[in-house]
Image (tube, rainbow over all chains, first blue to last red; front, top):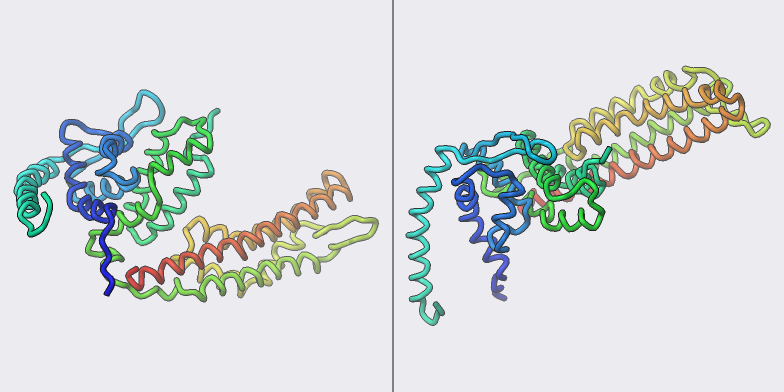
Length: 120
Length: 236
């Protein structure tokens, strides 16, 4: 059977699925933001967000889960904007992820260092 | 007054395509995602942005399929987690039947129009579809008592058309009948025989346009969506 090596894109997509929501919560922790602003920050490194549009289903999911709330605010230029803000539940979720992430990240780093024939 | 950039044809087409792909979501969630993307584009583009700028912005937003995939993944009711059978009203025969019904219905409208009293006079180069108000509209609807409600019901029950597209499908028959009824008489009042001829010909041209749109284009869109349902049913 022919085995296929996953491409970098596929690997990144799988990694994003586990972490992106929490990265969004983290970006909202200091202050509320509107969608375009949030997308700009997340896509700056070209790693976290592959296409700005995929942010919006994620925000809808976070809002339904109660981790994010939205509010309309007047903007200095143009029509009112929808701003996204972290809720108490979102903040708690983010804190739990941060502690879990450290454990997970260290475990993965260790596994990658110790895999037979693997490269650190 | 500047037109909002979200009215740009490329943006409209993009948002409509996204809306269609999110058809399985709850209406409120579907609307929230589409509105989010619309607001994003409104923030990213100036109102006087050209097509090149709009295309670049749409490229940054990413393909609608990627957004739809993100919207449908990771939920207990996600269509990607389990294959669902294709609903009966989303099967391949539905667009063909709707197309046939629309063809017959509009055909009846035209037949009534050319059969109405005082119509289709070709003497002296004048053409008219109707001589009096009411020559076409009521008889056309009467002739379509079987086809038109069947078309409305079948298309209404099917997820293959959006609400707006369903409105277009259903309103085509009465709209064309009304046009054939009113236009020639109005034309005659405006400019006698010449006005009547011009108005009749214009009504025919518009009628053909409506015919093409509702008999060919809308069923064509529906056939594309049938493939989407089939793909989801197989878990693709």
